[in-house]
Amino acid sequence: MTASRKYATIKTQMSSHFLKVSILASGSSGNCTLLETPGASVLIDAGLSGKRIVERLGLLGKRLEDVSAVLLTHEHSDHVSGLPVLANRYQIPVYANKLTSEYLHPLVPKYKGWRIFETGSVIDLGFMQVETFSIPHDAYDPVGFVVHAGGFAAGFLTDLGYATRLAVERVKHTDVLLLEANYDLNLLRNDPRRPWAVKQRIMARHGHLSNEAAAGVVEQVISARLKHLFLGHLSEDCNTHELAEAAVSGCLSRIGASEVALHRTYQNRPAEAISLEK
Image 1: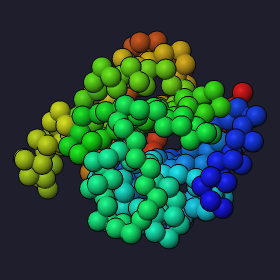
Image 2 (image 1 turned 90 degrees about the horizontal axis):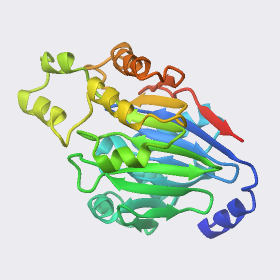
Image 3 (image 1 turned 120 degrees about the vertical axis):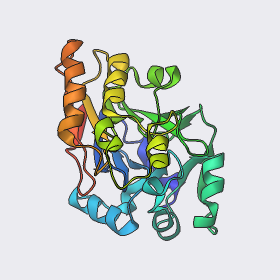
């Protein structure tokens, strides 16, 4: 089925208000999320091998053939390693901004399915509208996303050294938020395997969010609308679920938002799926 035929089918199936978020993987070794509406599905990033993406989708009863598009946040390998399979073998449309697509072109030199967007624009997929916004990270033109579908909004805010005012405003009124909590400061500082220069890069303003920084972002973006908060992109050796959750749950308690459900993400298996319906 061609992309245009897929989108025509999608638009006839939008009567139900439904959005499902399934984080297939999140961490320093690979990131990929499946978003589903009644009409179609998209992937946010493709940071697992094609084989593993197929396997993770299979655990959810899904196939790559059912995916209508892939949206890329930036060009780092833990977000794009599955791109050759998705683009070349499955010919799935790939949405990326100009600098990201140009960097990745040598990875898929014969691929003709790029859909280039301008950072800051809204991508209209028919079944979803996707806000794009710039974030501070050591990539060519990294972006965050807020996906609107079925009357719901899902925010994706990972791979950033700090939360700009723009990023905070964009994700402030979401129902579901995937937020980076990459490292525990003490574990990172005392990590014997990372050179000091690498530690400085991670802690810099174009690096990643610590647990404490993630808690600070939560305090800024909290609203009555937010119901589900995923803590993602955890370092495998410089963080733990318990440390990340302690920092963020303490913030939620302090600001009177304990009703927000905290969810774990995993590198080696899908996280608990969240279905939003009206």
